[in-house]
Length: 386
Image (cartoon, rainbow, N blue to C red; front, side, top):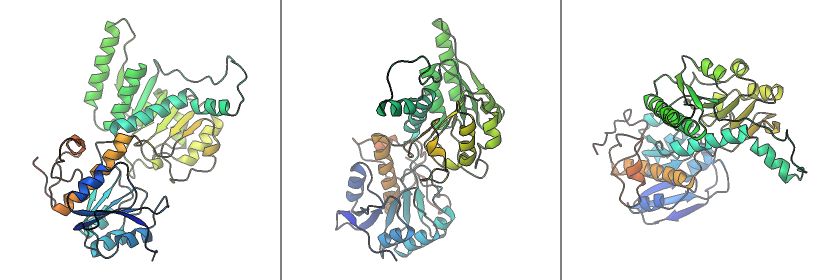
């Protein structure tokens, strides 16, 4: 058993004991809990990823709910420990919950919360940022300047790709994929090709209307196309951004064969889930195709990169920061806290987890509901009529 870990306590006399395994941005989430008679304990251990043993020690003998992180292994051991301590609420401070064994949570009657609806624009902006950084070789040029290597303008110095008039491909045109597509179409006048199991009608209407606007002003209109297969997107697009869910059908969606089907000077962006890309195959492709570029926010064996990736000048890599804007991260903390509070208080579950604005409005109290519980039906929670 791990030794007791260091904590910061808010409202020590609170009736309900709620643990956060990490300090989270902002203070509103703390206030929302303490105002409802919760004792909030925040783990301050200087350790990036807590072990199962660390979290078991945090839970202790009595705990009503836990706010955790996607780097933690929430399975049988932790849910049984939380259940023994009287807890019935857990929330990831994340929209994804691949780190959570939902069946184990169901077994112990523990609600599992997540934080959708607050990451859309922030994640899309990061994907757009990586697109620009890769296309214009910004990271390479920055390192070049800092190394004192610049001694004058040259015609071929860090020549990159122009995005205007090129084709952006989106695989997975849900909320984030569509937001990214709109940014690239409107911001850079790129044509769109997308693949999704469902038709992105709103996105299609947006591109059509923008194309009409450009034409009316004497410019080349943008176009859209819904591809019949993912491979069609990979073959036709100059810039491809991945936005699928991660399941057994999307594991290594981008592999050696599909990389070889892409254009030699294509740009690949991944802000979805690391295992969507076969990272070993990607490293080899980058080695033999120096004009092919990639921008990655997520990795197959996070926090580690596959050997050789860090050495690739044609790769831009950032440490899983797609949601790292102040507004978004504070919003995620608030939603996670309200998921736990809602279960503790016996509140119903919000009917539309993607409509979270009422919970984020700091000028009014949040609705008496849990914003998003992924296993609500399985454990018999009722839906809010608000």
